[in-house]
Length: 224
Image (cartoon, rainbow, N blue to C red; front, side, top):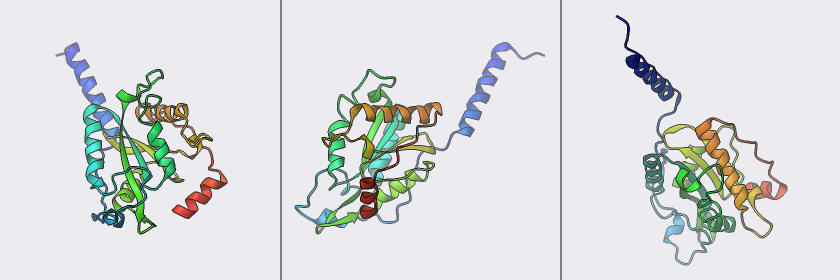
């Protein structure tokens, strides 16, 4: 007896979903961070903080909540890695959330409807010294492991993930996105987000990043 046309179409659609599911990675999970204690700088009063990152919170929980929220909304998640003492990170915070980037609607991607953002700190100050934040470093390492050929040049550092697929991640250094006045170029940030969207949702390879200049290489050598 021949299979009815609608049954055949339904079976074909089901097979496509099965294949797509097999090709995609599993949903993002929390990294296995060995140290759960807060960094030493959290007990210090009057520490010089120029950029706000939740280094004194449970960043595993912050990250997990952001992943779950973005997944429920069907959005990609921008992870902004930074340091509390980093002036470039403070500069990014003045541009990324604003109307020229996340609120911009004139490009090929509606950023507000496509992306959520979470901030993760990997370095802070304690007794006047740079102090690593173990949870933040664990999350950064977890993301970098999913990003082929990714190189971290310094703070702030952007990653974009699809919460429903942990097989890949998009990463972007921001050192070449700065203006001479010390602010980030909104158009270049928007282009980076389009590249992230096209890579994660359309499978289009992103353009290669420019090679970091001498100052960026020295910065990375000094700070990690």
